[in-house]
Length: 258
Image (cartoon, rainbow, N blue to C red; front, side, top):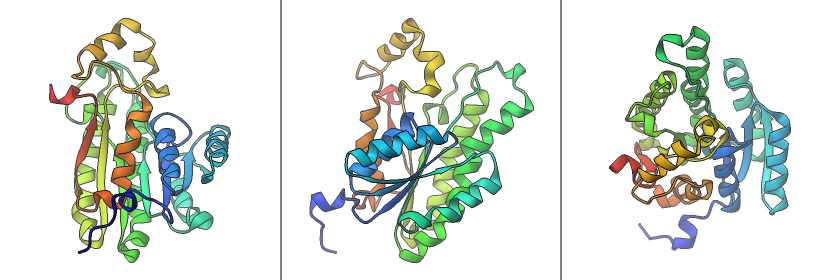
């Protein structure tokens, strides 16, 4: 096996990535990073106007992007999304499941709808999208699936029970997908972000005292900034991680190691 030059290991030219939750936050940052690394990106989220803005931002920097508005709580919509995805740039080589929801209520106040919505977006959608897109990756003998885990994959936080359960499931789903498909050239890994300011974490970031307390508990001494995720995402999406699978990479300033 001849070693590729380092610059080629991280080069995504000629690759196609589908990113859910790509209209903002972590998904938007990862989609932008993959486009900068050379991939054509298919942006998936529920809000069409925000998707269009993300697409224009990528194209303004010379990247290639397309959009698919999709309600990820609807399995028929997920199926339609998977069928439409190859029509833009070809079958996706990379899937990033970054869409997420965190309904914050005490455990005794969680409704059936709260539970169902959380599990559908956070766990069902990554499972079913990967199941539908993996066959084309397997046929090519190469693919990368990146799930978004959480510190709540391994520990509990208050008033966040369904979210924590879904993210614990993501950690194990990542391992199961890796076991099933890695021998066919399709690797699955997860990124476990620490505390990042996104629309999903607004209830926390809007409290300066609580936000600073979280920063103080990290080894680095600050909370995450979205660009901190770019390197990890490109690594896990590229040939640089061809011998890495079934892993969850925590990008959390050392919080989970403390």
